[in-house]
Image 1 (tube, rainbow, N blue to C red):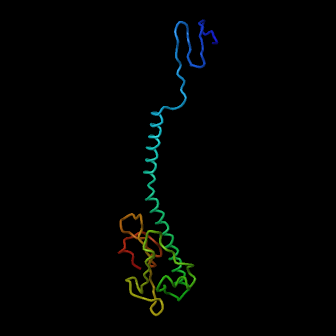
Image 2: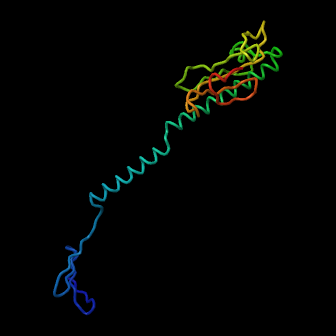
Image 3: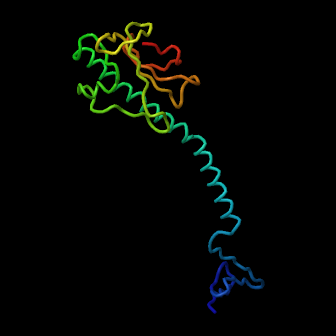
Length: 180
């Protein structure tokens, strides 16, 4: 066993047992080689609490609904651009009787479909006047139109995103207020 002189006392170091003997007594030195089970459990619990807090603050369902609403607003904006193009370049001063006329006149490449889960079509209503008179776009001119779809994350429950030709822009509104 090796001997070392420390502070004018001899100590015996036994490297196998990790003990130090200062004459006249022995000090056991505990060598730590990793984490205890309790420390690991506490660390995992803290990480779990932090992960739960992050998930609650992110609220993935709300973010998905906001993304669907952005798609709806974008799609209705594309349809509105096609309708305005049709109104100015097609049969002068009329909106089409249906959205399919936008694809045949090349004002839209294809009619957008709402994001799932939804009904599958955007609501389109042409009108003779602001009051909603019936027109077909051929024999009776459609001078007003609207496109709408319910929002997934509305400010007020039941609101739709509505584009109205009378104001020329889209906005969130109640279904009853979405008139051409």
